[in-house]
Amino acid sequence: MKRLYIIALFVFASGFASAQENGNRDAQNRIVRGPYETNRFFDNIFVGVAGGVNLYFGENDSEGKFGKRLAPAMDIHVGKWFTPSIGARVGYAGLQAKGWTSAGTLYAKSADGGLFREKFGVMYLHADAMWNFSNAVSGYKQTRTWNFVPFVGVGWARSYGNDTHDNEIGFDAGLLNVVRLCDLLDLTLEARCLLVNQRFDGVGGGRIMDQAKATAHFAGDLPIVEVPTSIATCAAFAPLSVMYTAEGASLGSLRYDHEVNAIVMDMDVICKEPPRYAASGIMDGMAKMIEIQNGRSEILLDDVSIGLFTAYTIAEMAYHVYEKEAHQACHDIAEGKLTKAVEDIAYLNVAVAGIVSGVSKGFGQTALGHETYELVRTHFTQEAKPYLHGEIVAIGDCLQLAFNGHPEQVAPFRDFMRSMNMPLTLEDIGIDPNSPKMENLFQDLFHSPFMEPTAENEARLRKAMHYLSAD
Image (cartoon, rainbow, N blue to C red; front, side, top):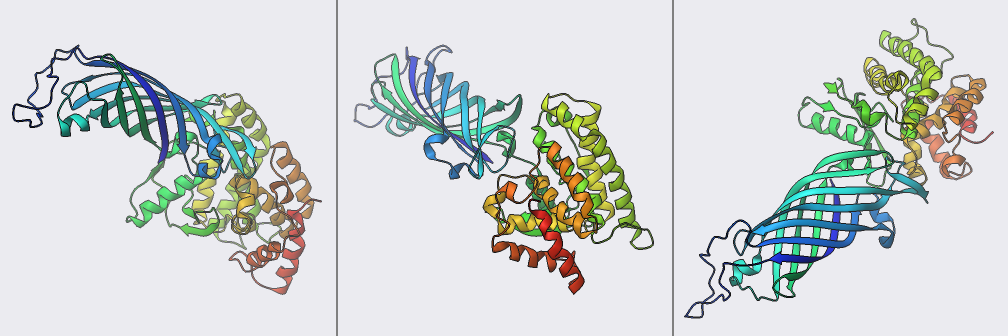
């Protein structure tokens, strides 16, 4: 759940041609809290206009400088007091939000160190129920200088920018501090918290899909329908959940013996995502064929299970379609066009890649390339933060190709990565290949489930490690 705090300074132009009493004490000097005369519909109407600031809270926003997180806000609304203590209003709030994210999401503008700046428009059409605490406790008094008014509300929230948008149901709560200026004007300081869905700022993808699958699993293998808004991974379909620490380091994976029940993709959303997401999903999809070979120069039915052979056959087909259609799909997504190439790549990235995981029972379709990804997230957590899953997996697959006995395929594979605007080496994602932690990465790869710990494999892996770095 995302939070948007709005602090605004209002001038209320209020029409209190009130039919209430001006005093708030009876003949015995006791506070009068009612009953009150019911007003006509157009009595006690108020209008508010405000300017202020928005402060957005997402996963990584607290890591940015406070001043750079402030964005302009405005609010316009109209309301009515039905009694001195109960009222309601409808209005517009929003304007802009700023923050930081760990990946190039829908509203990312530019890199800032290990994070990406976010800037996007915000619109919130809302209805609020208001309670004048001062009148409820101390009795109505028209000339009271200060009133304390908490409120809660619900509405329709929209984020927009970079030629895309997201619509969500929002819930808000806040506090009005109302200072009376004269019979027709109040000065009000308002603080509001708006709660919206995780998707609101365009941050979503594999972790949310994995969390949903894990939640369904631990709740007793409940049925689950995934609704991905990105094709950056096959997480919506794959029968596993990758687990992470709060800092972003990998904790390994939970593997399931069944797939999700259904996937729903809105292609109008997919074709407007950043092409970087699609490219990352393409590299993740291409990794399946490379990693199924793990240590083998080829895959033969006599040497592997029928499940793994089927997975390889499907992955090989997908690999060749990627080579043919990937560039056109990314070009079309950059222009926001829904074409056959976009539909084909979306199907490959999510459904076909997920089927490959399914027929191989969630194990065997990944190997050293994906293990490199998890270890980079573990040993180089901060350096890896700005980069997507498929971007790091592709670097690991250069090692995988060499370990499979095909070092000659690394150069053309990197050419394809380069044409997709991918980082090519560890240096490209800010990791020093001479770091002492590289030995930890090697040892963890060598002792991973994907490696038989023999002297021959140790030598092969040591040699293949060079392909993580520049030529």
